[in-house]
View 1 (tube, rainbow, N blue to C red):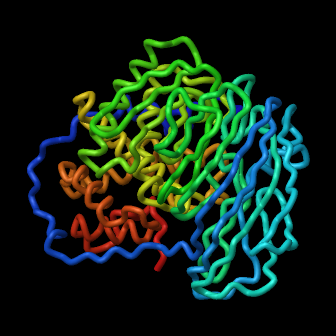
View 2 (tube, rainbow, N blue to C red; view 1 turned 135 degrees about the horizontal axis):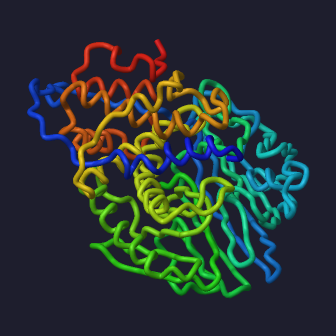
Length: 473
């Protein structure tokens, strides 16, 4: 952010509260035992509407130009007939026409698009790729979509970016949108927040690199040091991330059947080791408290924007700001690891329900720090007295300055207050475990989360959510 006050709010909401206000869970006696275990609860997840399997080849030349041949099998699992397909194509956002402020924008050129082997008409506007279908796609039917294109990465992009030595490929391929309420669930791209929403999908990526780079990805199949070519596979993941690093410092340890790797792009080797120790403690806690980690590798890249991807987290800065201090960096890493459960396993629409992954990731991180630092968790409502809006509005309903304060900060603060007011602090960890068991590899929205929470805490009305949650009637 440009303004100092906005930066303070963002850091406070996203990071600093994890250390300053977290601690040991109170050991109050539960006066009224909740009866949720005696009530049959049937979870109701949100259908994706679309289903995809991706098979993609990725080649990189010596000048940093990428050539992609993306083949996706798209299935209509809605009740409607489709006349077109809608994809996110985020590389196009960073081209000169769409990001004129970038000194080095991306280059994108679509060479061909085919559906079931036949060339089709398409329209690309910003990050929205619409493909016309020659015949309507009926429910439970599928088509094969092939997109061939070239691209380069911009410098100072957002997630999809490059610097002098390293390349970060986030949302680099055509991603089919979800489909609901008789329309494609595709919103306009925003530079703050995650404005893309995809369903769980399977991936096979065949890559070929001309440079001596280390490949880090959402697959459990990549190794260090990596070869110049190979095949990467991902199953049941939200998207497929790739980073290409030049001579990183690597710390690697195995915990049970999970390999944790910390990739540092600077010489602070002691910090990299500290991050590894913290990551081991956090991964162990989250697995014991929430449920199994869904991958065999956890890769932590200490560079770029703090962000989560399946099996990978990046941490260094907040949007295009300067690198954060070491304590904030550690908090950022913990938050992004927590996202492997809240986003990576339990899905939500990050445009319309961003608090469900950001707030829950902060909530879980807060519980971790409670045990890790051994201090009492307190509620500080005063911090949010000047932020009266609900936490579950769509991103476009917040100002860019206030967005993070609501979805990261106020959301987890008020959720903890609900547990305190029901003398259920001791049950917060069990709550996360049951939440995971009910909704793993499913999508949830705010109304369903509140329905589950009310059942868990045996709440009879919505009074605990007044002023911070907007519920649909």
